[in-house]
Image 1 (cartoon, rainbow, N blue to C red):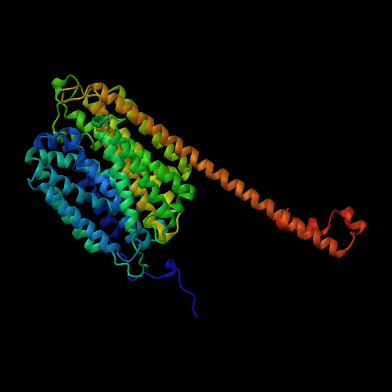
Image 2: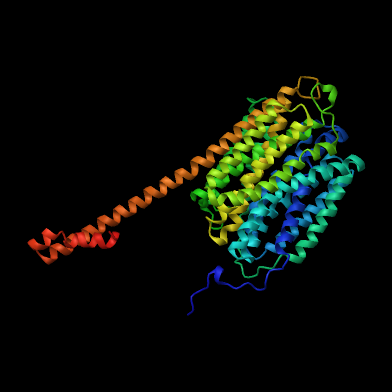
Amino acid sequence: MNPPKSRDALAPEAAPHRFLVPGLIFVAMVVAVVGSLGAPLIPTIAQQDHISVGDAQWALTIVFLVAAVATPVAGRLGDGPHRRRVIIGSLAAVTAGAVLAALPLGFAFLLAGRALQGIGLVLTPLCIAAVRDALPAERARPAAAVLSVTTVVGIGLGYPVTGLIASFGGLHVAFWFGAVVGALGLTVAAVVVPVSKQRVRRPVDVSGAVLLGAALVGFLLALSEGDGWGWSSPLLLGLLAGSVLALAGWVVRELCAAHPLVDLRLLRTNAVLTADAVGLLAGVGMYLPISLVTRFIQTPADSGYGLGGSVFLAGLALTPFSAASAVSTRLTRAAVSRMSSGTALALGSGVGLLALGAFSLAHGSLWEIFTVMALAGLGVGAIFAVVPGLIVGAVPVQETGSATSFNQVIRYVGYASGSTLSAVVLAAHTPSGSALPEDRGYTVAGLIGCVMWIATAAVALVLPRLGDRTRAASAAGTVARGDRVLADEGLADAEAAGPVPAAGAAAGAGPAQRVRTDATGD
């Protein structure tokens, strides 16, 4: 009977499409652009639908909330033979969601359309898994790094484009643009994404998805409504307690399930744990300035501090973020060969800290905002260029989709938390009866972002070293145990052979010593 072939040994059914990588980059860019339709348009949504800016913030938050739940499901499906169907189906949902949001049916339908668009954000980890399967390692790693940062770059491109369209055509025209772009991405995916029939089909943990969704919805709802309900209100505390219980139930479910939604045991791998912890903290640190800047620029000048800019100007302010992210990716890929991943992540966090610190101290002019966003792009681009390599290099190839999807979930939780946190802080600094927050609210939010970047740097530096010490201690213990076994075996041989001759003793060549010498090579 022939031994079963490993998945790595299976030959691909067909050579990958020659435009596979650029096609997947375009798909990821499309999703990022459509997903970014929320932030610059939030003040416009609030005004047009006659709701508060805090409620309108859900037009952005719900995208990341849906993505956080849908991503592990899609990742598990993507690790099986359904990857092509998942990618095409997600792009179809993005297109349909853009159409629904474009129709003038009110905020509830716009929110539902944005939720559908959140499904599209599952595509980045699936694209990373696709290039790893189709390409040799030396080409797959750089392609994965580019795909990881494409989300960040697409945000910077999507904001000014959609802002320009909204300035001249209105809110709903911007979403019609998203529908057209989504349809283009769907067409490209249908051409370049290969079929993967050889992959093993695995069941999806629906119960795990429900528990995870309940935990995330409860947490974000409590965070967003805490100021209105009261941070010590029974309703808020009950919601938080329910979220914690749902999260604990999800963890237990994932550890016990035969086919978990996310293999949490991979977190025992130090590189994966570092990548996920950094992704969460950096996600918060990334979306705080994005949400703050787009709102600050559109604040009327008669407020005493706002710039009174248009939606287009608010989007344009994020162009330096996009450009700097792209540059940072190339620089970081070259630098990682000369330094550890932890050091590179810490340096990126330091640049992010500089950006938020600068925003807290100086945000009164447009050039200061542009500088802040360029610095933020450099820091975020560096971090998200390193993170995929940590995961891809540490997990089994069959778990690539699941592990990268979970990292993406962590990022989306960070994005949603950063988006919601910005609204909460500004609402807390809005005087009663006023529609605008005090300028101090932006300063406080910026300082909170500084704390997040300090925590990110600490995690990037400490976790890898703890892992190194653990591995060193384990290796030392293994050697010591091996020495004891070898010595015991040598002593037994010596006793069986009888007394050691005097000449042998003088020469120091007893059996036990010879065994240990052979083992150590000394």
